[in-house]
Image (cartoon, rainbow, N blue to C red; front, side, top):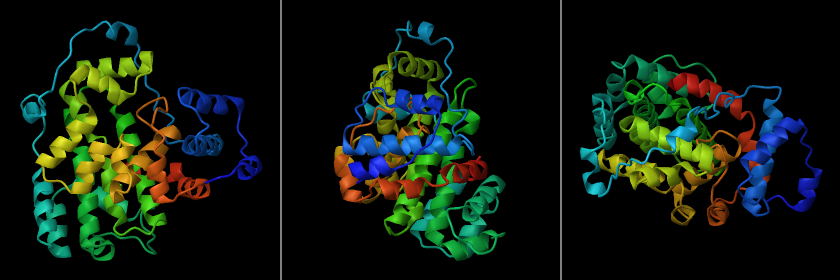
Length: 353
């Protein structure tokens, strides 16, 4: 962790307006704790980098022009008991590609079989090739075919990336107009990328599974908001006008939050346990400490929000010291992970969407 001497020696040059943005983001938390102080410095560092460079989050401001009027809405929809929630939440059918990929992954099928499953889906094929050729992998030459991509990156890794990319895009056509869903997708991409970088930095096996868990950790929110767009506006108004964390506003409107909904449906769809648990616990540090994937997703989600690529416009996360202690990542390591983040995010966002 960064000590006081390191803090004083660190040179961050940024405008008063940029510092004011960071201070406003951290206004509701103390920055005296070791984690929040580290993330505050990371936020200042990113602001200094994006003043003259690429800015992935420039259009992520939450614009709810009728927020005050929305707060007068008294209606709510209780999704309890959760055992019956699938009767009240409208979901698109799981694409056949996802089901076939899951079976192929379970059966340890060959690269040729996986390529044959993905190939009929042109959007997914483009996303996979873009992801493989992106900064996620340090390849010497461009990969132009699915079979080559699978052979180089590996069957499990390609299956994971395909699963994540297809799941994230399956709701696009079902989302109502007017919801700033790009905010949630951008946050998901940021969390996934930071989680992948953390896994690589920590020497974890299969870093792609961290990318996928990060990519899908907030899918419960997209499920909720696509099913109840009017109440989604109320939730966002509570966040903007009352300063409530979005998952707390969701509980007020639905008696459930996106963590519960995402974990529930991922379980029903037989998604990998790391994806299910990361959806369930990414706001709960007590459940993430010492968990291999979930701890990284919790920390990556915390970092993304802190540096201004969050669904929540204010940084409201718990400290999560035990999670960070279990990871062993300090400020210098975090700054290395965040280096060039915006350039990478712009490429990945274009790849998937």
